Length: 454
Length: 151
Image (tube, rainbow over all chains, first blue to last red; front, side, top):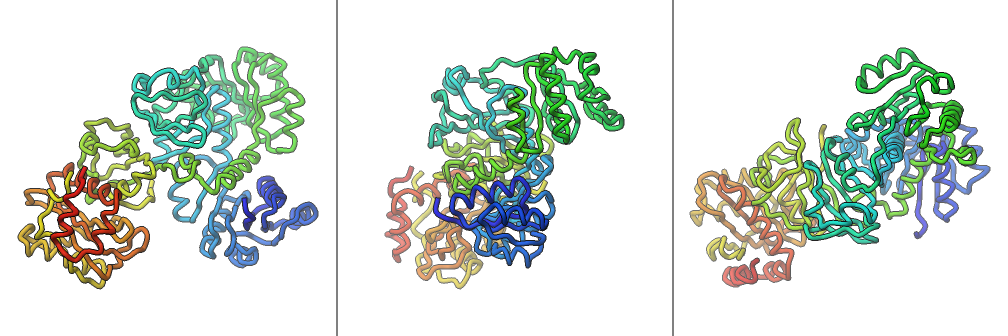
């Protein structure tokens, strides 16, 4: 990659590593950091320009030279400051902006809105990245990436396929995906293939599967070859990540136990998850773990905010013979130590955020999971206005060509994958998967702003 | 679909001169009314503006496809306007529009409307149609091109 200009706001773990690797590769990097001690560390260790102050202040951004940067990365620990800084940086002329946020829920529901309002090109949630990875590990799935559409009511998943998958053994028309889901494309090496009914995926392909929130899990199971593990999943330490994981597990036929130290919090969780068993107690208390027959669990996930407690609990669970033990680790630099103790599955939210931003940079600034191979195809969400040509037309009448897939429709409370006889109506939110060749036509037939207002 | 089947020679207007987008739409609406294809050019103009408000129909390279549905129409009507000087139309590529494909459909025929629109869009995308049309000043010659290789 030719040399580019990067500005990083926030020299915490994510920002520091981004600044270090980018400057090592010969790029021009400026770091904004308000904490004097952190600034000192950067000046000692890295060959970058350092600007002091609050990145949400225009004069600080100006001094950092955002006006001429190829990418502005707001990765401080303050969501609000990151969003504000991105908006101001864009105003001054920054080419692109990355914003890191904490809470997954916000990013799932309001991503498009926030991206539009604040001029964000890539909005990521450390918690969401972590939750997706942990869920994958718990369920033994192959989801490489997830994009949330229609405020989270529809998902697009990129799923790795092996030789045992139904999609690599049968033509698409015989693969019988669950209602409410469909295969929109296969990634094969560097190319994107939009399959017809006769096409069979090849082992090693990634399938892009679109589905309603209710159907996508079943669709993933349907194309996955791994057997479903039926044992109990134990979530220890019920912080926000554990809650996000628990929510995702609600739709599964899997027993879940949650261990939480705080009595009030435990009671709240018991109300929130009536199907799950919520235990009040200390996750590092061996007698509690034994009394609860933890050894019979399939997965033990230590997800509290304290690394030491997570480590202790994981070692105990490992000792008790739980086959799969995983943990959340805040301090990335210690993860090597964990591995030496035999704990392979450690998830560092900051490391995941760092890798996500690196992927974005290394892919040539392509944020959409669909357009990883730049421009090949994209996902478009549109509200149908009464004057929209597509309003009032059935799918069969539309005769969409292969490069234009009407993937899902959100109508009031209902979300569905439309079939031939379904008629699109004014007021519908329509999710389209469009190959670049059909983009002009789709813009005509489905006019309107990209902005979604949940 | 052969585009010529949607239009007639009388609906091809080579000399549209307009200072801006709304004047161009107004001029096209009036010409279509003069040919007796719609009864109320004001209504047509308003409907076209309503559609443009969702996003310009200027698809780039000097071509626009303004369109709408109208009550009381018998069939899909295609008119073609040529504006040799070009009109600022808010097109995706910012290029002034020289060729207008104006499509009007009965409001109870949304499928025919959409199919015609898609056909015109693909016809323009294929081959060198738009380059050839934008240089022409003669309605018959343009009509001739519209008869070529429809899908």
